[in-house]
Image 1 (cartoon, rainbow, N blue to C red):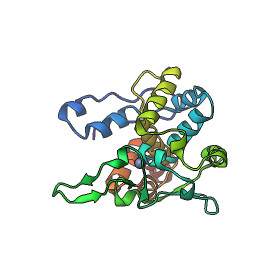
Image 2: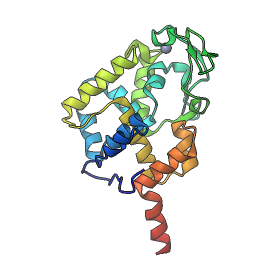
Image 3: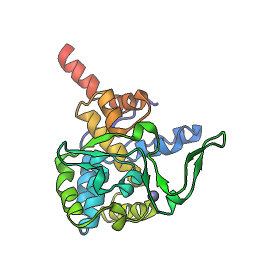
Length: 229
Ligand SMILES: [Zn+2]
């Protein structure tokens, strides 16, 4: 991880560190980190939404940090209004095309039979707090629908819709749903959430990923300096 990677609150673009791609290091992840949205880009993305479907998708991806596969598979039963949580299940039946395939591990053992959806990893089974930014759209959505797939039927549909909104927002670097997830992680880090809280909310396997985001945000060192310098 290059030490100069940074995301300073307002305006400004992420550093472009394409040397990481040359090294072939976790290409997708680094691409996400290199394309994180600034505060002004987040505002523009929200303003560029046309209609409820756009607003619902953009706010959910930006302020829950869900993976796009989790988002499109979300159903009424995931929502715990009393606790204010979205709970991703360990498994659910699903008739979508993506879930029609069985998944195998490297040893050829079936890890997911056809016809069901499972979160990416065991750690991805988690509870995500419903923040004020999503409470309204979530209520409105579930007043009319049972599941997200009624509105957004696939990962591809979410991807192209998100790209379209980013285009209208005039954001010039690549933007895809995973960028919203990374942006949410950065926001949590900037707000001072600790590594465990970040890891649990995001559903990461490793505390290292959380520590990376905290390091990149600079929030922890800033706080430490405020207290100790
Ligand atoms: Zn599915």
